[in-house]
Image (tube, rainbow, N blue to C red):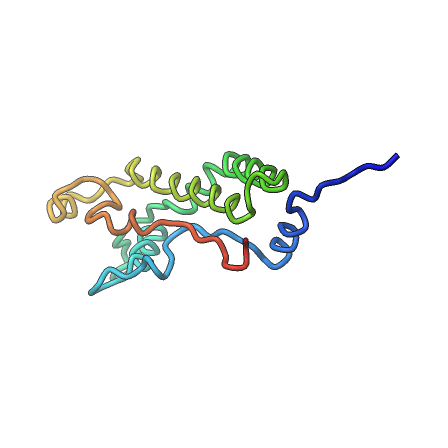
Length: 154
């Protein structure tokens, strides 16, 4: 009696993972430029960690990256496990599985930003930008959040 085992792309996926396949989520270099002035990446860094001026807090930290990762870790693991199982079953490529995770995490980061991360803006900032919503002014920062699947993943 013989048994046929179908690979369904497992060998390819395993090789991709061994090569260091990954998905990154955040503000990538291709989305960082805003023209003149600081880049989206730099503004995102300032917002995530805060800044100091003359020894005092100038911009308070408003974590949108780390807090999203921490608050949604269990859900993100579920999405990744589901996508990897579909990939190993031959229903998705590994690249598609990573893209599903990247899309979920980037969407969650944008949702975190839209939820108005505390602390509230200073009155002077509200008057200047004519809005009380932290992290959203022109929309360039939130629109720069995206995911990238490493090029060696197929």
